[in-house]
Length: 387
Image 1 (cartoon, rainbow, N blue to C red):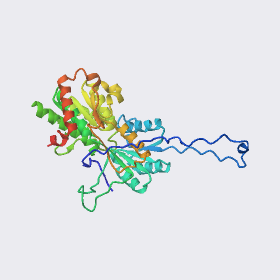
Image 2 (image 1 turned 30 degrees about the vertical axis):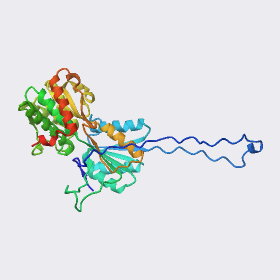
Image 3 (image 1 turned 90 degrees about the horizontal axis):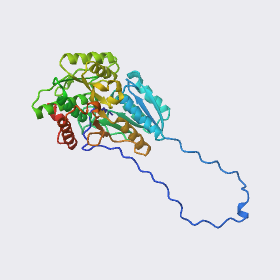
Image 4 (image 1 turned 45 degrees about the vertical axis):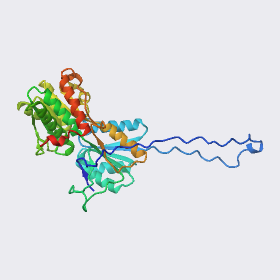
């Protein structure tokens, strides 16, 4: 079995379906006659013990490196888990300090009796695959991953095809769609006509953002006859700039340096896709009175101190997907399909402009709305603007 970090073409979005619950009707039989004295004599046996309440369903999350406090996808998944706790579920979680923690963390949650375990991030793919196979009675999900039905060669219909496990739900997000709206915004807003972007590591969960920025800029250039440039990513060649190294997601100082390099090349907007490393880039853009695009969550809220630099964010609604998956599992839908967040179903979105709302022109807003409608209907596809 193998997980695919790109969206599996299923023909339609696989939605999480929640089972409805209904109460049991009251009995309709007529009551018996009032008891006589004989029938009210003391019982000859001790009363049976009152039944104990059924144990709560236990839902758990295994967080990726970068950890809680990343103001991004780990924190969003934690919000989904917190919402599950508020809804009455038992909850637990683990945090990974490095990639060697993944398998052990999942095993620890299994041993704690977790009935749903959602792993966060594409880096946990192999550990999750192994756990899904080893624990068929536990329900698993993974953020930023879809199941690859076609096997390691990505060609369907041959011997290495991998049937979708009944106890797995991939939580996948077409964030390139929201990223395309952000790229269009930048193309119409930038004063220098240059945007910079980079990722922590080169995984599709990262490069989809960058594809979106490239496609949005290309669409705007075609529509308006402009020549806005994107530094750090070539969508056609799928090559670009990545942090790499031992700490790609948590090096804020490195993020500041990368942002400075982009500004030195003429960029006045930067779109980092690198966890807390990217927070350093946003901090730098604020210090030089320029702008940034946030990722995963609405970073103008989660990074309030830097909100003066954040035009908008390409946002995944991860918390809702996590909560809905837990609820679905508890109701008996154990998996077997991907949850795919899109612009059309609200699983991805462009965050509000907040303090920049008054300086984003009405024409630019109208252009973004028109593009959103075309992407949602399928008239415009991100891939068509990466050539």
